[in-house]
Length: 117
Length: 111
Picture 1: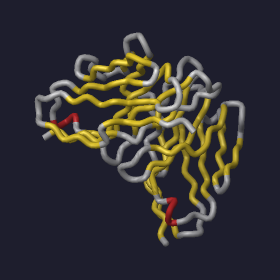
Picture 2: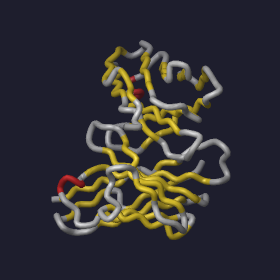
Picture 3: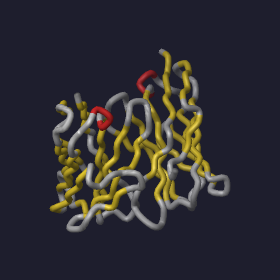
Picture 4: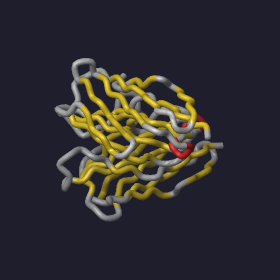
């Protein structure tokens, strides 16, 4: 099956620094990738839709200048949390959608746990 | 909010019993999918049901979809301790590929 990886799996950073999270589709081309965040014991909230070669589309309430998304190739999307603060501590999950599937099936990465001190 | 709602929020059953969880959503959908998530881990895709389907089976899983009531249910039969996890429904619409997840049900199966 399709595999999506994320790197790093866990990151701890100081308040005010920026953190970059990578999402890669390993064995397929992903024209669209999605970024979610999940707080403890809560559901996944869609943050943004990342389309290869174009600007990301952000969900209402998500600051695009805070969460920078770049989808420079068909296998890589990055999420950069700029000037991170403790309230940004969360589990960030990406998913990838490939054009070869007729049905809308997204393949999810294992997640990145961000802790901001 | 575009997020669906699931109930119950938490469910605790004995091993061997059946577990039923429900998902309600707000707008017309294209597909509805169920996922499980073990604590602090990634998502595992369980089953997809299309808007023109009413019921689907996969092993010990049975999913129903009632588009008139905008609701779906997931039944896990003969539960096992390893089924302990959080279960989420996710819907997508005809207008795009975005997924919107329900609030989730935390299932505990007691050995």
